[in-house]
Length: 153
Image (tube, rainbow, N blue to C red; front, side):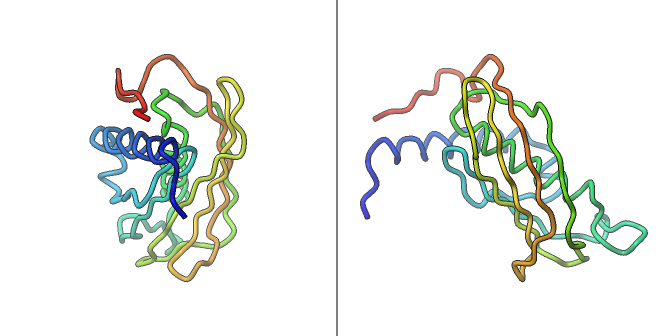
């Protein structure tokens, strides 16, 4: 299937915005979070659970899992070059992450209306076991991720 020029341009815009965001995202870099794929309202990221991410119960700290999901949320909702922040979010942990796991978070935009959006993020391990479900609510503020960058059709 051949993608139309608008879809290609929107994907390119999302990739450019994400590359710029990642350059400034020192938290994601420190945690080893890697951007795998991005598109309009969509992102997929992964990270490996290291020893310094494991808590006293010998499982991945919930805050680390939350950060992976929240970071993936941020890349998906900023994919259109409009500065967007979280207005709220929730997470449900359904299985523990383990030392050595490769956790992947996938974000899908569920609703975008005016300045607000709803995004669902699922975190899984390398065996496709669901680790957590995260829902983020976004709010667009003023500005562009990359000032002056526009979609070229």
